[in-house]
Length: 277
Image 1 (cartoon, rainbow, N blue to C red):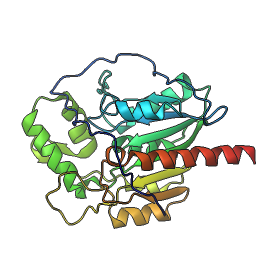
Image 2: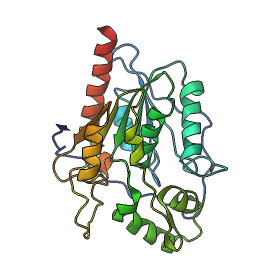
Image 3: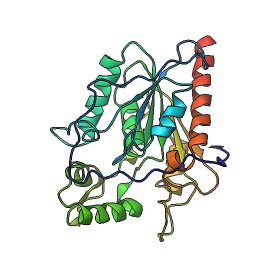
Image 4: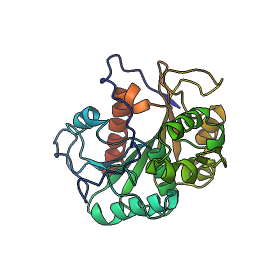
C-alpha cells in the first residue's frame, strides 16, 4: 500500500449539509465544466467528482476551485442532492444515471471517477458493471463496504432521523442504501462482493488511517474501512489501497485535501505515461 504525508495546513472546514426534508432542484441539467488548464498537458482526463451522501459542491467549493486550477472537473451529484430525486431510490438507479453521463454527456473525453464515501462505492460498482470505455480509472475515498458494522454511519443516521423525520433524502438513502430506517437498523447491506469481480479499469482506494475500532466517542468519524476490508482490497485484482497519515478519518477530502490532490496527480501522470508508452 502507498502511505501519503498528511497536509499541514488544510482548507477551512465547512459545516455538514442537511436537506431539512427538502429537495432542491438542479441548477443545471448538464455538468458544469471547469476551465481547461495547460498545466497538466494536452487532453488530460476529465475528473468526474461524485460527492457523498448529504454532500454537494457547495461544501467543497474551495477545494473544487483549487482542483480547477489544474484539472477539468465535472460534479455529478447523487439524486436528490442539488438535482431531482430518483423515481426509484437505490444504487442500481444511481449506477444507470452515472453510466448515462459517461456514455452520452461526456462521451468525447476520457474520465476519472473520484467518489467521496458513497460516491466512491458507486464508482467501484461502475468499474465492475460494464463501465464505459472512456472511464480510465476510479478513485474511491473511504467508501462504505460492510454497512452493518459501520457504527459511525448508524449513529449519524439515527440522529438524522430524529432531527428530520420527514427528510426525503433519508427516505431515499437511509433504508434503501444503508439499511437504516426510521425505526433503526432493518437490514445490513454488504457491498464487499464488489471486490470479488475484476474491474475493467484500475480502482484506487484511499482510506483514512484513524481506525474504525474500537467503537468510541469521536469528534470526526473514523475510517469506515477496517483491517478486514483493507485486506480484501489489497487482495482484489486491479485494486490499489492507499492510506493517509496523521489521524485522518472518514472525512478524507475535508481533512487531507493535499493527499487526495497528490494521489490524483500521480494517477493522471501514470495514465499519461501508459498512453505514451
